Image 1 (cartoon, rainbow, N blue to C red):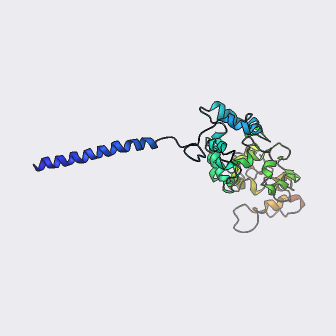
Image 2 (tube, rainbow, N blue to C red; image 1 turned 45 degrees about the vertical axis):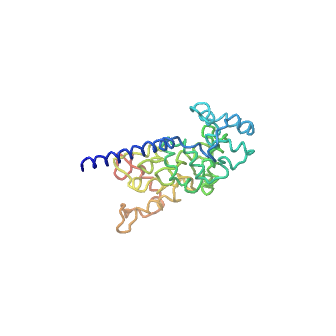
Image 3 (cartoon, rainbow, N blue to C red; image 1 turned 180 degrees about the vertical axis):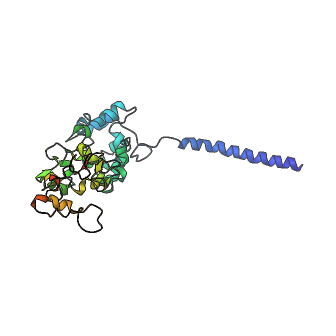
Amino acid sequence: MHFRRHCSSIWLVAGTLAIVMVIACPVLVATDRPPAPANTVSGAVEYVGADTCKGCHEEIYGNWARTAHYKTLLKKQAGGQGCEACHGAGSEHVNNGGDKTKIFNFKTVEGKAVNDRCLQCHNSDEARHNFRRSEHNKANVSCTDCHSIHKAGGRGEMLLVKAQPQLCYGCHAGVKPDFSKPFHHRVNEGAVNCTDCHEPHGSGAAHSLRATSARDTVCFKCHTDKAGPFAFEHAVVKTEGCSSCHTPHGSTNPRLLTRSQMNLLCTECHTTTAGMAAPGVPSFHNQAQKYQACTLCHTAVHGSNTDRTLFKP
């Protein structure tokens, strides 16, 4: 008798659980659906189609139709929503006479909100993966500060609002005068772009440089003869990098050197002070005029494969 009562209790509990699962299943299925369209205002918001947007924004639409955004969001993407892929479903916006608060307006939101919207699509390469931790993102610089959604005023393929370097100078005004100094990288002349050296979307290197494990990889892309490896290294190149002797943007000194006289630059490391790691200045280098241009003798200042004292390459 006790055994039967115990079995009955088990079947009662099992039956109750089965009823609960049957009731709960429709709820789970109902919530297992794709997220609502971006910028959803209410459950009734619907996509209205790009042709509806064109009715009011004909000029903008015409510019947009010549960009990669149009080709991807409307023509190539399966079920592409066109304008609404970025601005959100537009029925509330249309039904309320074009109320800008009823749609995602890139001009009225914080920079990071714009970036989050753009990164929903532009997240497929390593550069964009770094953007959230980049200095641009931390400073609340938005994608649309540099890129146009609808048309490009600079390089068309990047949808830049201006061509380089004027685009970069808009914020980085402090470096602009360097490129007008007597010796400079030819950025203003168009031979070099800011983005040849810097990754605007962020990188793991200081100053968002396009460098890998070696800090001067970005310099060696152009100055390949200085890269080595050499049998006899100039240690400062490996430990301090190019910028220990050269200013990267521009200088009043030849070869973008940080000092006007070669001996002043070299004796910052090669001094007679006790305890310095670099070799000291020999006693016969009395800093007379003929000894002041160190590279007259030490011609292989970046490194040599034949001479320990860097006299010969």
